[in-house]
Length: 239
Image (cartoon, rainbow, N blue to C red; front, side, top):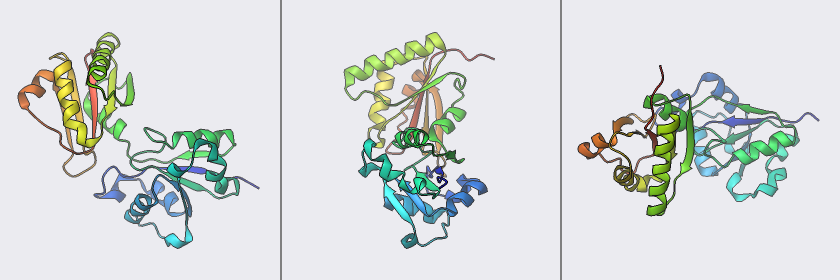
């Protein structure tokens, strides 16, 4: 029996105009699937409805990824092994990037299942594109240290690496802690270091703010409890 493919389906970053965030080919492939692996079924159904998914959910199979450990990939990928193309849907953005789906993609490769990524929004790449920082050399760190002292040490290390290697450092924070992170950045980093905050990307009121730490301090801007990507750069841009 021929194995089904594991189709990596990006999800919206913001609910507004969700269909416009995806090319027609991505929508067509997603509409043709009836087997899914998702982080949360409720969120996935809401997303699929927003892109005009044509099938009744009673006729679909939806397995939640977060309820299964790494050693349960046999069950998670059973539909692929039985010949069904199966969609992997992230909570937001693209599967496998800052997302627990990466371990399942690795398991699919090991089982000889063809992996097919579809085009859609990635908050990390959109933020980097819009930041004006170095897109030739960058590192995504996910969440930084929670302890204040450990965070201060980590931020100085990132700043020093950026200055030495011209690296853009990218990280995220839980929305309710955004302004606490912003305060730490202004407290620890040098005045000339540049900080970009990409806030509520793809939303009608998205903001992309790139200023030096000194300018951030003068502006007294806050981010609030909105999804945000932070980018730090203290190097030199090459022409």
